[in-house]
Image (cartoon, rainbow, N blue to C red; front, side, top):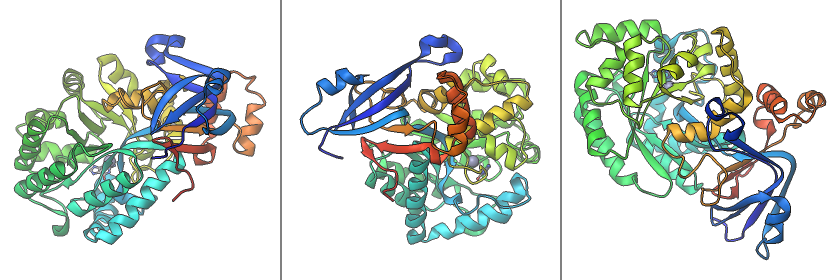
Length: 435
Ligand code: GUN
Ligand code: ZN
């Protein structure tokens, strides 16, 4: 963490609520604004002239004039061991896992490989403007140690956990119900409460865990209520049929997790596409979060997420890349594909709601909104500067935006990617290009 205070000057955009609920009261935009950060925290935000007039002596000034300064983006579901699985051709979920992912994940038995990929992954997130993510490691405890060590070294707020799998996977990628429990517990005890890190109990999905392993994961969730739970649900029709065959006593896929005690406000379930009404109701009642992973759902041909149905039922929603089923580290690309998925479902998604979701919305989904997700004094200084004219095509499009921020933000989302990210600040430190 840097000792020197720093002032970021630009167009400060931050949310206090969901624009779908509170309309224009949900956000503020200060056209010539500034954020004062020191010791990793936001100390003040306001009009640039006010912040500059009371700047501490020696404060660094980063001028991002014309760029939006926003909270760092948050990715609610992503697999760091899949950086070399992205763009693997031609398969849907179960074959894609078997042919590509389970082959790749075996390499994480090697701690040096874990360290190299963890560093690459975090740098790629920062390049894309993502400062916090909820991350799957592999079954190997060393993959978790390497990831948390890399995140800690960079001062980043990250949530991660060891994958638990005790059936229907290659021998080298399986633990047992007992070993999954013991290894997860040891990792929780090693890493919990350390700096900005959080642990997610991670039974991969009901296909690769026996009932005994899901019970063990549920026991961990009860023992360590501060931990998260992450898993996958209702992504693909063949997967759902397999879960029904493996768990004949359960009423539904979501019910498998409910029975194991895995549904609660700190649970994030990837995908949630093909849901029965009773499953939607169970998600809503438990406060569990459904993670919308549009690039993955399109790439693996999984289906179309029904945001309107889930929102109306009161299900909490997050947005996520799901790399490497997902095809981009960029939350901008992810939201742009999310918009298209919703269009195919007869729904729409205003830019302000999408930017809310990538920032405060996802912070709320991960119960981190007291620390990150908005630009306020006392919050952690994870910030990005996004240039709406970063590429020739963006600059050309912005000529027609008539200085209307909603038009600008929608075009930025549609055309933007890592090139639009001028800088990413993690705990107040510029991180883009540091790797
Ligand atoms: N379901 C179980 N594991 C995975 C995974 O790694 N990626 C995706 N997209 N779905 C899964
Ligand atoms: Zn996933």
